[in-house]
Amino acid sequence: MTSLKAALAALPVLAPLFLLPAAHAATVPSGSGSFTTTGQVISVRHADGNTIVNATEIQVLTGVLDGTRRAEGTEIFHPDGTFTARDSGTFTGTIDGRTGSMTISGTSSGAGTTGSGQLTGDRGTGGLAGLHLHGTFRPVITGPTTAEGSYSVRFDFGSCQRG
Image (tube, rainbow, N blue to C red; front, side):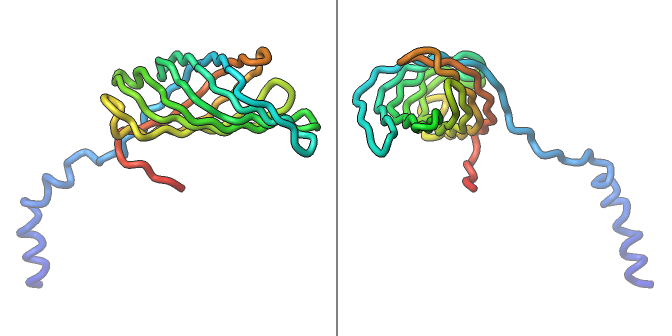
C-alpha cells in the first residue's frame, strides 16, 4: 500500500514526461547526381589474358556532390569481357551546402561498357571535416579514356561505422 501511495504521489511530477513527443531517429541525408570522367593512361600491361590499366582521372560531379575529384586507379579487363576497377582520390567541392575536400574511393565491376560499384568517403577538411559517405554508382564507359554515369549516396557528419 505504501508503494502505491508513493507511485500516486509521484504521478503529477511524472505526468508531463508522458506528454512529451516521442524522439525519432534522425534521418541520414542522402542525394544523387551524375558524373563525367576523363582519364589519362599511365601504364598498360598484360597478365594471364587480362589487360591491366593504371590511370589518373578527373571526374566532374553534379548533384548532391558538386565539384571535381582527382583520382588514381587500376582497371582490369578480363578475357571474358568483364572488368573490375578500384580507385581513390580527392574530391574538392560542396556537399549538402558545405565546401571543402575529402577522400572518395570506389570499386566497381561490370561487363562490356556498363557496370556498378560502391563508393566511400571520409577524411574531410574545411566544411567537409567529419563527413562520412557511402553509396553506389553506375559507370558507363563512353570511350577509351572516358566514362559517365550516375551515383546515389548517404552521408552524415558524425562518426563513421564500418561493417
